[in-house]
Image 1 (tube, one colour):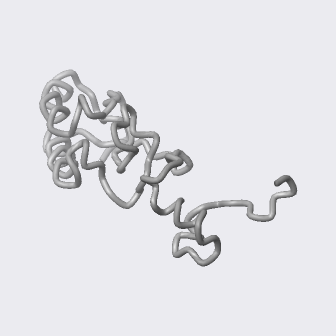
Image 2 (cartoon, rainbow, N blue to C red):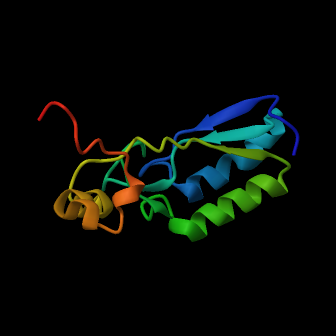
Length: 127
């Protein structure tokens, strides 16, 4: 795939899911867009409008259409000759009970199986 020459940002969310994004792919290809630049697609806090409040980087958001919907969208994008650029911000996570990995680390500390997933300064000089 060639480097991007022109991108179009898709802001995915509950009102603009993978299925709805598929409906605009041919239009974007006709405009001459070379790559789609997509907002985060990972499982985010329920009702997230932007996807930057991720609760699980291991799964694609069911609210957007889950892995099946994502694969269908990217397959269409590539079939139309477009590239895909995925916005991914690993330090943007939701703090709350839906983020089971973080809650496990906060409850179990070094005994959590997710301990190494997070960069936490456990011996910070300030309480």
